[in-house]
Length: 360
Image (cartoon, rainbow, N blue to C red; front, side, top):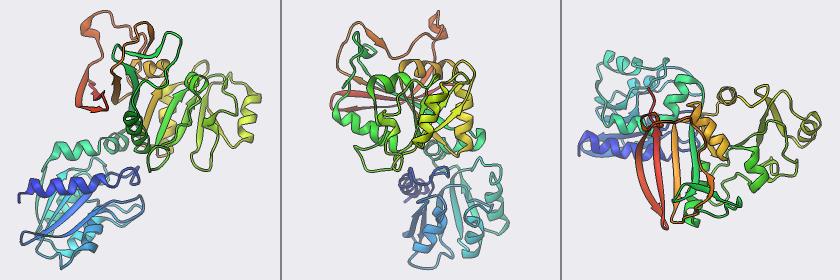
C-alpha cells in the first residue's frame, strides 16, 4: 500500500471524532510496520488522548522503526493533554507521514521541525486537500476565533421555503430531515431568528438521530417569543441562548431568566450578527448551523459571515411563495454571490447541494 492509502485510512478514523472532539481538530493516525497496520487511533473527545497517542497505545508491537501516518501535524504544546511530539520522539518511529500542517501558531511547523531534529524521517502534504477539508471548521476557528458558519434550508425546486400562505411543513422528505438532524448533531450550535420560532415553534434538537444536541441560539431583537416556546424547553438536554437588542422587553427578559434562559444584548436596534459570532467564539463554539428564516439567512450572506451553504431542493413547484434568500443588492450577474459546489447528493428524490462561499 502507498502513503496515500494509509492516509485515507487515517482520514476515515479522524471522521469518527465528530462532533465530540470540538473545538479540537479531527485527527486520525495509523501505525504501519513491515507492511502491516499495528496500531490505529483517533481523537475521540476533547481532553482525551490525541490520535497519535491513541494509536500508540493500541499498537500490538513496539512502534520503534515503524511509520506513523497522521492527518494533522503532531502538537508541540501543553493543553488539556501533553504534547504528542514528545511521545512520538520517545517511541522512535523510523518515519512520520503528515497529511497537513497545523495552522495553530503554537504548533505550525514546529512538530515537523522537532521530528527532523531527532533524526526521524518525515513527509508532509500527503492528501493535503482532504486533510484540510476535514478540519475546515478548526482551521477557521483557530485563525479567527469565530465559528465556521453553515447556512442550511429546504426549498421547493423553484426556490421557495414556504407557500404563499406561509405553509412549509414539510418541504423535504423524511430521509432529508434525518440528514438535517445529523447535520445539527455535527455542529456546536444552531441559530434561528424569532420569526422561525413564532411560525414553526421548532425544538431545534437532533431527536431523529443519535448524537449531541447543539446549543440553541435565537436572535430576537425585541424578545417577542413567548417563554413557552419549545426552544426554551428541555434545558437539561440542550441549552438555549438568546441574543437581543438594547431596546428589548425587560419583563420578558426576567421571565426567561426565571426559566433558566440566558439573554445577551448584541446591538442597539438590530442584533449585530458579527458580535453574536464573536461571543460564540469566546464560548469555544467552533461551528454554527443557521437554519433561518429568510431574513437571517439573507443577513448572513449580505454581511459575508457565512462559510458553507447546504440547500435541500424538493421536487415540488410552489409558484408564488416566500423566497429562500431576500435582497442582496445584486443588479448584474457579475455581482452575484459566487459559490464553489463541493458535493451534490440525493435523499428520496430531494437534491442536496453542499457548497462553500468563495471569498477574496
